[in-house]
Image 1 (tube, rainbow, N blue to C red):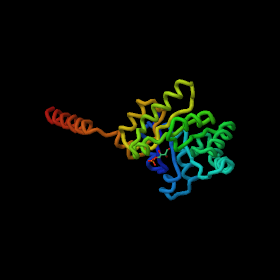
Image 2 (image 1 turned 60 degrees about the vertical axis):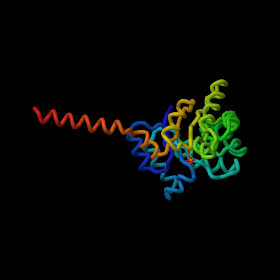
Image 3 (image 1 turned 180 degrees about the horizontal axis):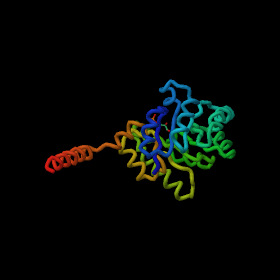
Image 4 (image 1 turned 30 degrees about the vertical axis):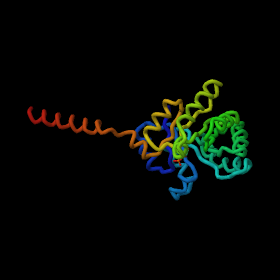
Length: 216
Ligand code: E4P
């Protein structure tokens, strides 16, 4: 499973990219609004940091407007992926953009049927929201499992991005359920890195090393 980062914060992207683990970036209007910066400038900076799919989401609701809005993003760089909402209008826009060779990431996926429709509209990626389903006491990981099974059974090459990830455990479960990608907030990346036994292990190794050096 590949790892994307789910943020529009350039410093956070730079930090996790420096670990050498990042394959892409996803953003959404809420994440962009949080940064309070010009989105085109943010995208230019991300393009310089990560060489992989970078999702930029449209805010228009009609297919014609979505396609028009998408242009400024995909013309910026070949790595830009257009993120579209899972609606009939989003499907129409996905069909038109995909036919032109523009990759689309269909977002706000909460059912296997929604994912199947997106795949048939030519989506390169679908983003089922694990955390938001878990928030309402529904099994988000089961959705990943169902979509993975359907795509596998029918030879569909649309990639599944496990989105709305809130915990390191959801990353593990998404990988086991067959997601091709997990898009992970910076905070969860840092949580994935840590283990108390790693920290105490380093402390112990250094103590032993220093003690032995004192003897020679
Ligand atoms: C998907 O790509 C979205 O950007 C994101 O994962 C949504 O996460 P949230 O439910 O924590 O807002």
